[in-house]
Length: 288
Image (cartoon, rainbow, N blue to C red; front, side):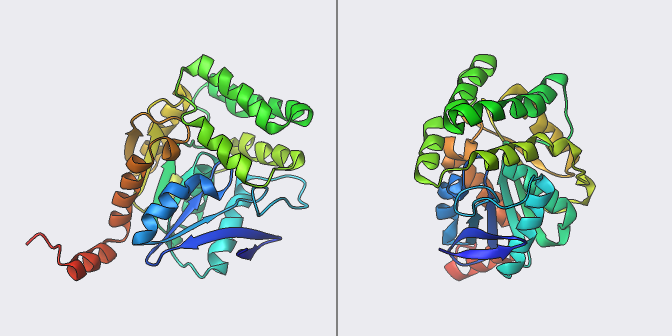
C-alpha cells in the first residue's frame, strides 16, 4: 500500500501513468476513488496522482483534536515534497476544491494549473449559504453519532433535492458505492472533517496570488448557492474559465465523466504547452 509521510500521518496515494503531474483532491466523506474516471483516462499522457485526505480512506485519522482546510493544504504540500513533485496541476472537487485553492494561493510557484469543481470560496454570499455551510453542517454531527454518517447523508440528500430540485446530488448511487468499497470513517473523524469544512470561512485565500491557468466547473443542477460561488470564484481568480457541466450535480466529474475529463484535458494542454507540442511533433499530428 503506497503511503508517504506527511506531517504527523501516513498519507495513502495512487499514482498512474507518465508525464507532467496532475494531482486530484477529493471531497469530504469519500476517498481518492472519487476521481477514478479522470485518474484513469488522463494517465495516457500524464502522471496522475490521487490521495486520501487526512481523516479519509486508507490515510485514516490522527490524534489531532480538530482539523482545518489549512491543515489539509499543509498535508498536500508535504505530500508533493515526499513524491518529489515540484510543480503540478491541481484538481479539487468540493472540499478538495477548498484545499486546492488554499494551496494555489499560498504556493503559486508549485501550481502549473488549477481545476476547481463544485466548490466554494471562504466568503459567504448569502445568509442562506451561511446557514447551510456552517450551522447546517455542524448540526449533522449529533445525528451521525446516533445513526451513522451514511444514513444521515441520505436524509440530507433528500432534503437538498426538496429544496433545490432533482439532480442536485447527481449520481448519488456512485458516491454510495465509493463509500461501500472504501474503509469506513470513524464518527470522531467525521466530526473533525465537518468542522474543517464548516470553519472554512475563517480561512484567508489571496486569490490575486493565483497566476496559473484556472478552470472553474460546476454542475448544471448544483444548488443555487454553489452556482453563485462558481461565478464568484471565476471572478476572484483572474483569467479563470467558467464552465457548467451539462446534466451534472454536486459530483459533476462522476455525473458526466467524459465532459469533465475533456475539460480538464484542455486545461492541461494550456498548463503544459511544451508537452503538448512535443507530443504533436512525435505523432506527426501537426496539422500541416
